[in-house]
Length: 485
Image 1 (cartoon, rainbow, N blue to C red):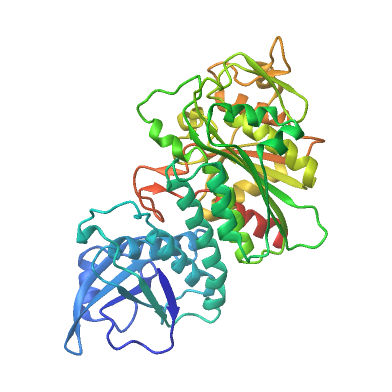
Image 2 (cartoon, rainbow, N blue to C red):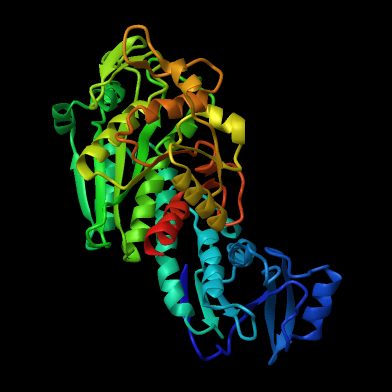
């Protein structure tokens, strides 16, 4: 979707949208619109939409009103996004190709106007490249949005937000792609293409390099696959000499469960088991594109978990890069094996001030929180509070879960330093306790288990059915709040 600004009202606009505060109708609208909206019980609530046709200069014009809610609400920013997204959801496949967004006379400031545009664009994303038999009425038609009457500063605010939109879209693209096109090597290649010329530095370790470093946990997961594993790092230095914040993502590009094979029904969903790495890559693209004033490193452990004669077996013991040994009781608890080596390498290589990892780690997280919140585990209250606040601001919501010595004992092994699964109870917590064992010197660390958040079987406020892009805005907002100020 292309978004342009103009000072001149197009004379041929056939579709015009206005943003409406709760209880306040814009002035200058035709009686058919205002009375029609009232009859339809349109009140300007956040995300509410009404549309009607009027005649202007002999031509039929479609006029839409999108509600932005109470202008004094603490959720004003999110409500503005809902207003923009509601417009797109209504007209994306309507046959209209152009939309005039008239912000004249609205109460929006520049940031709120940019939030409307962010909602418009995010809701417009759909991945149709493999669909060849769509009916005309199913195809996306809305391609251009022209903005008039924008508050001063909106264009600059949108330049910043458009980078954020690009990051979300990149994450959705990576998550939506099937595993025969996105696998460890192609994931790296796609990132190299998208980050070319941005000023970011990209490093990719191959299997020989990881073996030399002793990454037996990560490499063990990929033994059964013909696709070689990779460790990808993207660096951005925009904040002087400060220690970086590190984002680490689980990138299991397809997860069969390995020898501990998953049931067949629903296994196709496991193409998005790289959702943590996808979120980290997209967040990094957004931060780099908007030239964030921060030092940031993104690290992604990329593997494919397949059953094969060479695959690791339940009961095998592997040695991680940290030197700690792990009894692999279940090869379907593989994400933590990938992350433990990625986390250790990140700390040794970059000595980050803070480290946050993202992973579609456990099905137990879905049982606990459904599709409403990602699970948050942390050894540091300040970092946890910062993440919770960023989640509330962006809508990428988190819910803090416990850690503790009693849970930690559940993964002790009689023949190695630890086992990779605990009992059935507290499955998400024991997975987090496993990762905590690889955090050095009390480095502030948080683990976000986003198993229920990266994919949706039904449309949401700012996404259609499929990849949601969850996590990108959370990381971006965390950097804005805690580093850039």
